[in-house]
Length: 312
Image (cartoon, rainbow, N blue to C red; front, side):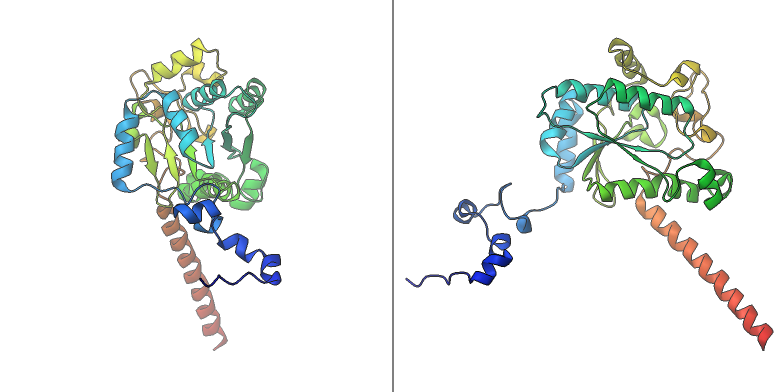
């Protein structure tokens, strides 16, 4: 039987055969495994029927069981958090699930908009002391470190003048930069159905329009369940919660709520808005940026035409 040609010395040195060939075991079985060449492995994705099935199965499980499923099923898993109560429950639960040195860890991503309450920043320090193994990645608006620098670049009170642009530069772009630099494939969020608004029909697993997998492990919990967990487990929390706040974001768009109001009714009060941007469709911001670019192009064209008219 003719033998396949042997690789040349040059090919071996370049690593071409090592990159393209399956292991002998894979070659025999015809299946890819975790030790297979990176070339033949695929990203994590769900078909619609599979996603529906998983949500049905996870719906009846508690947060700890959902988190265990995440740890064994989802690579490049992170937790996005502004250190609200729900996110703190997730963090504390994860800390108790992995006490061994080799236990899987879920890094945290915190978007510092530069307009958080001081109480929120103080909480970040307390959380870092309480959970020293938690690796925290902090992302700020691009090329600025302080609110003064932000306003020098984008103008004062941008959240009032152009809220979409503010959401983009303070939250959406930093989030996208974090996901890209950290190679994030899935994130744990602190969203719950009981928070009201667009979150009323939340699934446990969602996939956004870029393929990012979002897990809402406490989607089924009420505010009272979250609050009880925090108290029973002595989890550090934001002091503003003792002053009538329930959902806490930037200081300029967050107020205490009245009895009987939805948790998030103190956010953007009086505005037709219920999300900060990072949970909106990314295509919305792609369209917004295209529109802004077209406006800038129109201004340049008009300026050029005016100049040509004057010179003529």
